[in-house]
Length: 256
Image (tube, rainbow, N blue to C red; front, side):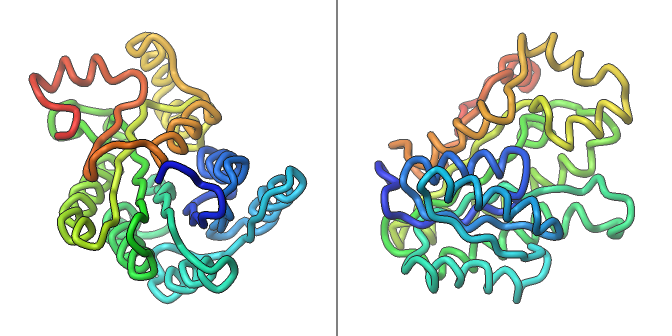
């Protein structure tokens, strides 16, 4: 996918943070964008308004990713509104919420990601791409310990990554590629804020270990870059701050 002009993208969890900036940047590259939110319609509508004010095309669709029917409505909206679904950015994640059940992290970060991939790629043609957004804390969780407050989320996100990568051969037969983008803690995100609140100093520790942490806008730009990059399906792009994770995990390829 070398050009986004005229293509249609669904970005999950795009009413704020990395997802919102990803949606804006995709639109700036010429894509039609379906902005997904779970509860905060005004925030999603603001992202759409920003895109339209800049001359782009976007629509907001509310859908809880743990609701299969809502997910299919989300994906179908892309086709019904713009005629195709060419790019699916699986950005939404969570699991630190205390009121959604003990299994919520696994349901959202593994089961819902796999369901969204299948629902989206059912509507994709040859040349489509899926981008899964994750963190180094999750990608390396089997080799590198993370903060106890984040461990269950990290394990569930790694389980989601594994489940999606297992779909690569079937997707490849249909000409659809899947790329994983993994980043360090991101300045200004809800997860980073919650972790720093639960463990004061956690953010500063990561800054020191990584040298610096990416901003929301910087990481979103990397996601958009990988939406278009000429890389093999199944590629894992490690964005910023991965050196200490790689050192702790031992010899391994980037596409592990």
